[in-house]
Length: 205
Image (cartoon, rainbow, N blue to C red; front, side, top):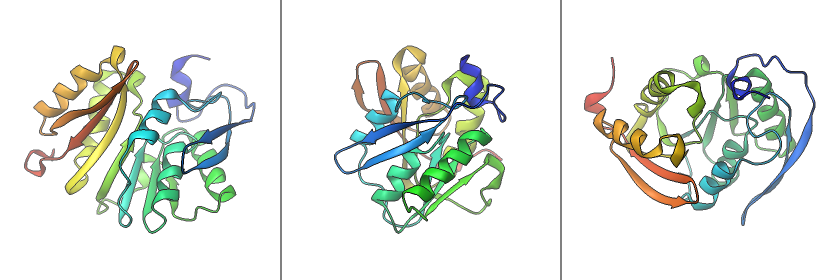
């Protein structure tokens, strides 16, 4: 399957459903997946690294999983912060459907699986966790991150996982130069964990 399928709005590959296991020290879930979505065969190693290393999410407010796929990050956030609302934003409609199905299967009623245009404009996020879709291309990725990272609440932090060989270090420098101070939280094998804060004075119009 080509890399482009998982960030298409409507994947052009035939459905072939399966399940994967998400096992963390505090979370164990079986998740439905399908062809045409990111990480269909297993929990992506970068996603797993993010979930193992992140601080506890805020226990209330609005939280964002940007590029949620079938939901491993969003559902983990929802389990760890049952009093918060988790927005699982995903362009791929097949993945959105799986995310909603997985949330229902695990009784997580605080997850909203939505498209990018379906989050109210007045929602600001107490944190963002994301394994962003690097392969959509640099210009599209930059536009995506500027749009959502500038919706962080004051003093809030976004946590991103990015592969080093796909430009994690240059992305950190670019974000910092665009009013989103970014530091490396950790590094493991080929992955970087990046912490991003928002300088609201530089938010795009």
